[in-house]
Length: 245
Image 1 (tube, helix red, strand yellow):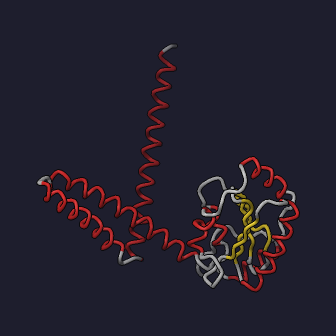
Image 2: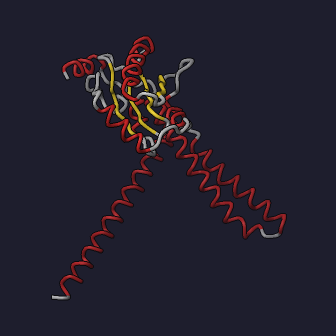
Image 3: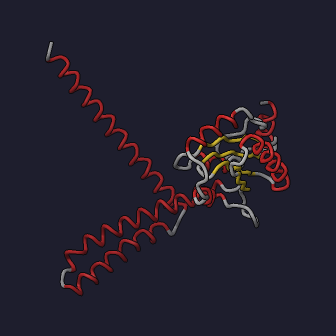
C-alpha cells in the first residue's frame, strides 16, 4: 500500500514535467513565429539586432584589448549584445502591434486591458452605435476616463460621463484622456505610459470603495467589441450588431 502513493507521486511529477516542457515548447514556437512575422514586415529588424551584437562585442573587445584581457571580456560583450537584440525585437514588435491597432475601434480598451499593475478597467461604460466609447479605469491616481472615437462625438460623451462619475466619487481626482494623434490627444502607443506617470492620490482600500460605488452606475453603452477590430471589418454590419444588442 505504501508503494502506491509514492508511485502516484512520481507519475504526477512526470506529468507536470511533460506539461511544463510542452508549455515551454509552445512559448518558443510562438516567439519564433512572432520573430518570423516581424522579420517579414520590418526590414530593419535583423540589421539592428545583428548590429547591436557586433557593436557590443567590438566595444567589449576594444576595452579588453586595452587591459590585455580581450578574450576574457568578449563573451560578456556578446551576452550584452544578445540582451540588446532581444530588447530591440520586443520594442519593435510592440510598436508594430500598436501601429496596426491605431485608429481601430476598441484599440484603447485593448491597451487598457493589457496594463500591468493594480488597475481596474471597465470597458465601454458609455458609447454610441458608431463605436465611440468611454472606458473607465480605477487606479492609485483616482478615476481615469479614456475616450476613443470621433472627437466631435466623444467630447460631449466624455463630459457627460465625467459629470455622472463625479456625483459618485466626490473629491476623488478624475482624469480624462482622448486617444488619438491630433493636438491635445494621447497617442495609443503612449496611453499606458501616460497613465502610469499620474500621481498616486488614493489607497487600494479607497480603490475598492470607489469601484463598488461606480458599479452601481452601470453602463450607458451598447455591447462593444473587445479589442481592435480586424482590418477589413465591415463597419455597417458591426454597427447593426451593436444596435441589436
